[in-house]
Amino acid sequence: MGASGADDGEGDVLLEFLRLGATVKVTAIDPRSLVEVSIVGPSSAGEAALRRVAIDKLRYVLKRQGKE
Image (cartoon, rainbow, N blue to C red; front, side, top):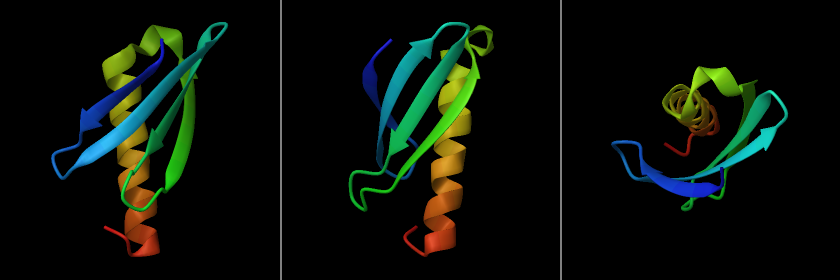
């Protein structure tokens, strides 16, 4: 797993997937504000579910910071 880009419906999000044994660390970055968040989940959850959680967390943080 590696880095990829995604369109969250409101713009681009940079995503990085790093497998650590039975878990995957997903880092989501907003390229405009450079806000970065990370989540860790089971590798059995699948890429789509982990991607969704990471993007949702990034949206939450951007909203709290008033950058969305």
